[in-house]
Amino acid sequence: MNSKVFITCAVTGSGETTKKNLYVPITPKQIAESVIESAKAGAAIAHIHVREKDGSPSRKLELYREVVDRIRSHDIDIILNLTTGMGGDLEIGNGRNPLKFGLNTDMINIMERIAHVEDLLPEICTLDCGSLNFGDKSMLAVNTPDQIRKAAKRLKQINVKPEIEAFDLGNMWFGQQLYKEGLLKDPPMFQICLGIPWGAPPTVKAMQAMIELMPEASIWSGFAISKNEMPFVAQTVVMGGNPRVGLEDNLYLSKGKLATNAQLVEKAIRIINDLGVSTMTPAETREKLKLKNYK
Picture 1: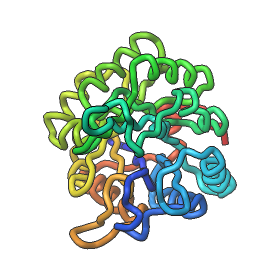
Picture 2: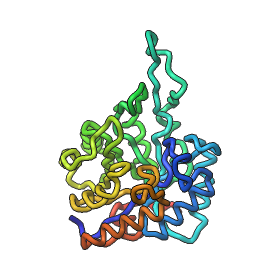
Picture 3: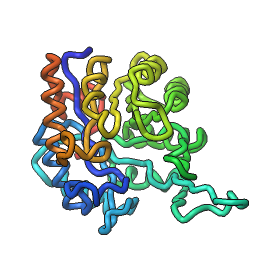
């Protein structure tokens, strides 16, 4: 267990959550304001998706640009971590024609998926490190080894640190392979993602198995979704990682009580402090991760 940890706040995500919790930010202004509030509450990193006006997920560059510009023009320090997960969604066709893909399919070239990162140069961006059966129907999150290598190579060239998103054991194994191939700079950064159907379950054994596959030099974060979010804040810290919270992963502060992002960060800090651990500032986190600050 480390004496100091950093907190990531995943402020909005891309799930169908906006009608379930009125505090889930939708517009660029709302997302930026929520990031700033989370920073004031004690988050060091903000993980950012963008949405259309109706709350549906988006990957439009202009929306990312407005969010980033609003945050960077503010006088608060926080590390930006932009998603690159959008554009890898494949809905297998029903019936006898699986190649007649469903309406929820959104597939683009991997270089298009990181175009907003090349344009805006955040300090971190996510890099999903494998494909996944996403939910109970016919959705796949598609990230092939060839795609991942191409993205990792380009991110290394532009000096943006990829946070390797590991939803299952094989994702972590391939992240280890990227490091062996020299595609990840020291220290490599991993995110253990638990409880997303049907990846790794939210168990201590699953987290431990994924930790054991990381390169020795790794710095890692971890989270579990929904009601397991706060228990895994404690579990992540105890096992040597850095916790993630936020409305992307969990909508409630306690049973029946809707949360804001800032409230989730504040609750996480109380848990962390009760373990005798303190939280790192963005500046301390930036130094630990050896990040390039483009602000």
